[in-house]
Length: 154
Image (cartoon, rainbow, N blue to C red; front, top):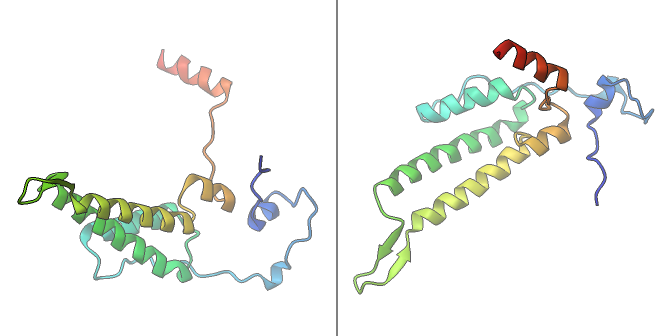
């Protein structure tokens, strides 16, 4: 069974380096500029909205990640178009001789979804990748917070 995921250097610094590990010299650390808030003009309206939403929730995405973010938005756009096209068709198609076969759009959507997931992971936008980066955690409500919430709702 694997041990806990390694903590990112940023989180170790934030916590005061509890393990007393040797950390890179902060004077030599390069702070990368964030990717632009302005979505590229060639993207569709929906892809631009997605760009803006990601920028709002993922401030760690650097300028050097711009190409990946652009590719993610384009793939999300492609998936939307493929799903719309599939809605106009059927999941199962038939040859002129009556043989059934899967609609190729289903496979194209599946492939696009896998590509999207890979890019989300590379950008630290999946739960496990966020925890590896140490940028966000989901806070579980404590018992006392739960009781207070129940009392308010009663």
